[in-house]
Length: 291
Image 1 (cartoon, rainbow, N blue to C red):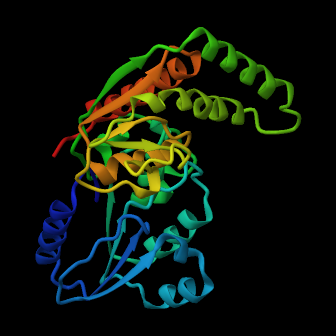
Image 2 (image 1 turned 45 degrees about the horizontal axis):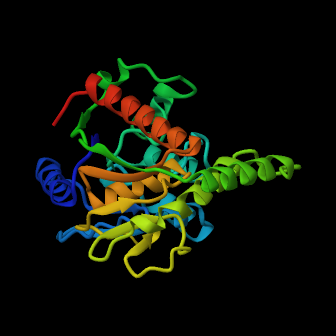
């Protein structure tokens, strides 16, 4: 069973219903990512295992001894890398092979591209999908239901001065001239930070902002790690890792994402990449069974 887009209350209701329908289940192992814990109030024995712990010898071998056909495995927000052969996934596949029941919860069906969904299908049936690329038909072949996360990007432009444009140009040329053996992806990442500095004048008291680091030195500007549920943030920097930005959306549950952008080319790139990701996400939603 794979369920996409459920909030904690809905997850708990589904687990309770599943246990009523399967009264022979006598133990539960709940795997979770550290930023998205879930606590269940049940009469059945439950052990919680953080994502990084799944690969530890102290956990791996004892679990293989204890997991059986009367065991329910719950995976809560465990799609943490696009590498389908990641060691954490492989260890969890061993656990799955021995259990009788499994429920997979993810807030988004993908990290970056539709092929990421195959990671979740491997949890459902590794043997069936081993090595296969994504096909939309697979969304109907298994017990998969999705609740689409609907949101919009709201942009506010700030015009840069001629002097700022010239400074940006010099910074860009310097980054290219000194790239050497560095990862080329560091150039757009650094350019976004540099362009973001021109947004400082837009920061207002009484509003909350998200940036990639603490360079603004303002009490109302937070990093992605510091984001909290229930607060509507204004984005100053997109995170260069899609997974980190996805986590931000999971935590805040924002439906409108305000983004302050400059008239510099790097911000055009950031917006274009976000819009393309949103389109890929909505394409998967559009072909799935909804809940």
